[in-house]
Image (cartoon, rainbow, N blue to C red; front, side, top):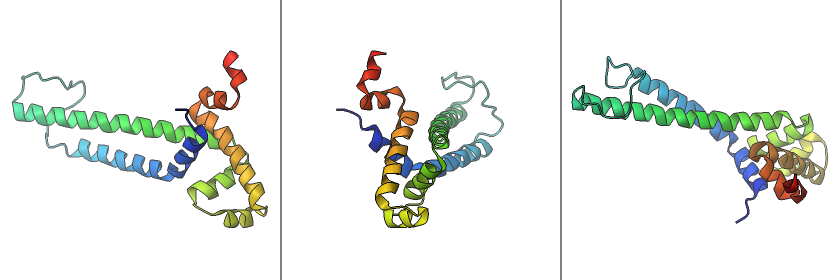
Length: 157
């Protein structure tokens, strides 16, 4: 099945604010686990998730569980930061007009009559600007494969 990078880009944009919110939630979770891990006195620096049997089993089990949670949340945070940075970098390459229309459509959930009124242009023209912006952003978000979908000649390079 062929990937639809245009729709994928729209899905990412519609969920951008939620990605940012989830990043904040994960950062708070990580902070809370590190503050109150239930196993006081253990420094997790350099600790492996492999059982060592060098400390009592309940403490070891709790330490391993906390370390696994910390690792999982940390990986999630890295992925979220990477995706958010990709979105923001792609947005920064758009013209002010394109960025404004993307902001209103995807982040502010405005409809086309509201957008066209605010930017003082026809709905059709605002939609064309949005379409061009999405086509630019999909390459920033998905790379050369999104460009190849549009321009098969690139494949022979």
